[in-house]
Image 1 (tube, rainbow, N blue to C red):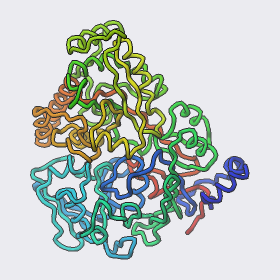
Image 2: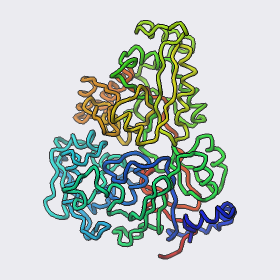
Image 3: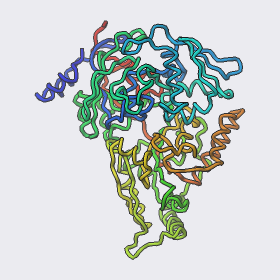
Image 4: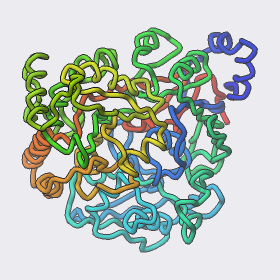
Length: 548
């Protein structure tokens, strides 16, 4: 059995943890083994553990072990049942009927029924508990939700949508079901279950020590045989990247998701047999690092200024200095593994040389009325970014050097995750924000949620924080779900990508590298193709027990 986090912490204090990690025998893999504690680290404190309301890496890693969706994707991208034991699709392809597993119970012992499922989905529709990603993408395709009996739940679409089930099962959009009896009739934004959840998942909540850790324990009554395999999950809150890496090497942390690891550390980690570096679990991500511009206020309310900024960005340099060459420079909002990606139609805002790009940027800025002052400067902007991520703020340092030549100064404003989200998506008090958005299993679920004009909603994350509104783009998003062929849909998404490269409400920089890292003693860390933030369902250690 693997030592608990508390024991390892005491050993570390005695200077023995590193030696113990080195000396731990690795047994032959002979199928799933049981027991032990799996330790993941997250880069910041979650805002809460309600999986519907709180989105992003940190809350999802912490909450996913405690909740279940109806279905999720398997390791090859096909839907498989979790709470749903089966489902059928009507002949006209507009109605999906899910049959729930029998005998599932919430962690407080109450039965889980289709009433809970209906209440959860209606929370997005009626606004009392909106899932920001699902609301902007899939809910708008749905005519109605129904629960005709305790084990049946139906979704009726307004019209057929071929990729519905695959998108519905994708990690960022699969609705985690929450208990109606815990939330109904309460002050939902302040319900204590946000911070001490009652779920149905493979692990139960034990404690949350702010600034330190979240601890979960095995649900002994979980309805899927042989899951979970470990006894407990310990999620350490570690904003400092050096501390995370040291803890990983010393065996104090077992798992770091891809943007919680400094990219400069990846070559050495790849050479360490005690560490596994993998892109498993990051399929269908299409995660694009970009600059979000507040186009509702100067200076970026003028498209000429946005285009000038685009001319001054050296993506290859940023990739080399920030991502150590591991990322993929891009001008598209859509990731390369997402259907309908292209980089053939965009305005690239690149004239082939630094000198030509500088000259064009200066021309655009002068034309926009931002002339150099006596000190040679035109204006100063601040790039807001989250703390705790290895690359955070480094883009600002590089951009400041590039922009200076055109008379623009850029400073960095680091904020923890809750403060960043409040400033960028609550009060919209930002000029430039360093953001990541995933295009996911299909561009329809990844792109409209932060670019539809109707998604300019205060307090919703992710959403259209830029204040961007283009009726032509809105119409193309609506048309994409009615396309009669792949060719027609490809043309729609090509036009979308061209418009975005013209308007530049956001400026794509790179598609992120997927370098998930875990200790090599762990197997089956990922149970779904896009399960990078849901890593505890099937994980087991080769040092575990052969039986419970």
